[in-house]
Image (cartoon, rainbow over the protein chains, first blue to last red):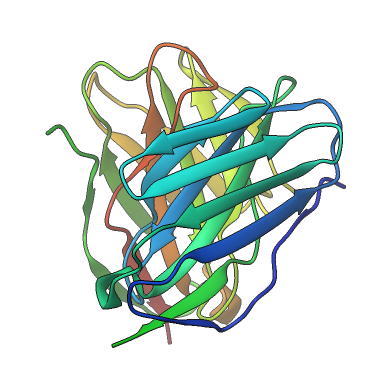
Length: 111
Length: 114
């Protein structure tokens, strides 16, 4: 059974701070990793994908991947109240075509 | 920007009835998916579809469920003999030319079984 784990939160950070979201996964052959944002009652919205070890930056977002530790994270710099949402980690392996989603971390950015 | 569209946005059905949820994936995408999310719970994979056949399905996707791509644009999920526990948000997603590309989600159909 492939598992993706995330702290459920809520994670509260003040506006302007860095929010750090973490995800671990159980399947060592996993090769593709994604972060989605989901506002309450809405569909998941893609933030970033990452396939190689190291960091990948896109605007205020940085994804970090460490396959040896089976760990992927998302940093949000200069957090804004509009970033308040649930952040979903999704993992895809090379044998299947489906995402395994983590339970999500609820982020609250306080003005 | 191209998007995945789903209809209806909300479906209310009596227990035991059949429902069909409809999706129009992004036009040049080749991989199609259905997920569900029970209120307050995580997003769960149901089925993936490629080259006009199911490529993978989860334990949730039993004989009660079926998918179809009846024409070049629509992708449907049929649920036969609905149960109360089928009440959930159902999301359709599609991805491009390679299966490991990001999946883009529609707005979802909220299914309420009475």
